Image (cartoon, rainbow, N blue to C red):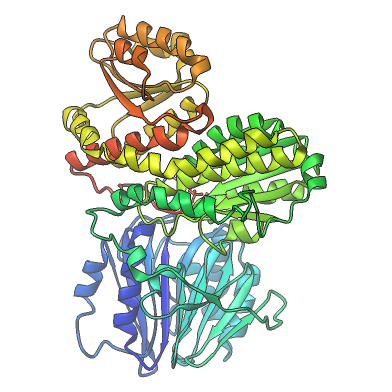
Amino acid sequence: MCGIVGYIGDGKAKEIIIDGLKRLEYRGYDSAGIALCIDGKIETRKHVGGIENLEKIIDDKEYESNIGIGHTRWATHGAPSDVNAHPHNNEDNTVTVVHNGIIENYTELKEALIKEHGIKFRSETDSEVIAQLIGVLYDGDLHEAVNNAVKKMRGAYAIGVVCAHEPDNIIAVRKDAPLVAGIGKGCNFIASDIPALLKYVREIFLIENNETIVVTKNEIKIYDENGQTVKRDVFHVTWDADAAEKGGYPHFMLKEIHEQPKGLEDTLLRRLDKDGRIKLDGITMTKKDIESFNKIYIVACGTAYHAGLVGKYTIEKMARIPVEVDIASEFRYRDSFVDENTLFIAISQSGETLDTLAALREAKRKGARILSVVNVVGSSVARESDDVFYTWAGPEIAVASTKAYTTQLMCMYLIGLYMGYTKGVVDNEYYKAMLEELKAIPDKLRLVLKNESLISDLADRFYHREQIFFIGRGPDSGVSYEGSLKLKEISYINSFAIAAGELKHGTIALMEKGSLVFALSTQDALFEKMISNIEEIKARGAYVIGITKEGNKEIEKQSDESIYIPDCPDELTPLLTVVPLQVFSYYVAKNRGCNIDKPKNLAKSVTVE
Ligand code: AGP
């Protein structure tokens, strides 16, 4: 969740690093800092708060260099403060480090450094331990000192290191936290995330786990954990810089809500061959593999988990295989029934969520086949999977996930159809009909988005509410959870989602005059039950906003207001019903003056436990 940028070359390191850090602001942070090598010394400056605070204390001409590292911190050990901000130095300020992740054994390392070397620590952070450790191990070769230090460290980390004695290189190491290297002309870069470098380079090295890189202005050398040099193909970044900008919208979130039709088209159409059949290039799973699966686990966090809730209905119906959906942080500590006949599907927008990555590793250890649904090419989850099913949503910058979610749903449908058809449990007629319906979804989504002003009017009337409920049955219940999370995380309203059938088992006690309830009701087979639920809560004074398919007048009769989505097969309604809830959350948060793209307490990628 922290941002790292490093530069070495003929240019002005300070300006380039600060610009790069600003492009990583969306990752969430509470302090920022920079260290430059100047005349054989390391000058470190850092400040709690936004990058603008840092810019104030580096605004002098003398503070310039051609090599440096910068950091935006998301506190894990030690409160946000100047002294806890990165970069961190060793005692004599000859070694400085930026770090993303957590050093699990930092306490024992710190105690040993104090006891054996009399080190006086300045901060409460685990990151400073890295700088002090490298400092005591340094004996004229920074690369060697870093290698020896990481051998003692346990945990997840990406680090960048510079040394006053060696102002011609930057060393960086990756273990379970993202790291890339940018290939420039007469200069090179390190970063925790590609957007930091987009303004300067298009050619990138994706650094693998347990690799170390030695970066000079003319060369980037990659070493594996045994110290052997590694040949790595150059990854060409196709994103244009604008894709990471707001493109005219007031917030990334609204831009990304409107990008959903295109994201769905990209995710679907690239996977249909000329005969309109699903072709999953890059997926090596064979018919034999598919026939060998007797259970599927879908494991993820947050919004990605909610995509899994819908995926359960989809894949069970289409592939006829039992599906268990689990929250990653729960799965990894449960003695699950994973074995070699299990397909483990990890869903992750960032591909760096540590809980999801750890759950994936647990399933792999038990012999499962790993398929991941990921939005970031080359991310950790992707690299550790047997097969990767990319969502082509493009970079998702807003912390609240929208286009990643709907493209994750699209992947659930394609996986279900592909597996069902391969197994012969989906007939050709249903297969083709469903693909045609999926192709029609993006335009139907565009129609839903045409009602944006109706939804914003709704938000104008209800944005002051302190509690809002979301209910549904079947796939609609999964979407209810996602709608509630969207509202919660950007407007800070205490929203609440529950499967409608569960209301009578306790939650209905909360219903009182004026309780605001969104009732999702798109499943024909569950329609009567939903009508009963709506009647139950209305009898207790609730104000019900029904979300249903066009033409469903019964809901209109029962609800106080109705939101309609274009007709489509029941299986596919989640692709459409979630969008009015996204838009509603956006405008409620806007009316409440919340920081929509960077909500308080949240980060875009949770790379710590
Ligand atoms: C989504 O709106 C949230 N910001 C959060 O729940 C997110 O979905 C979760 O942290 C998982 O992230 P991932 O998809 O990158 O793994």
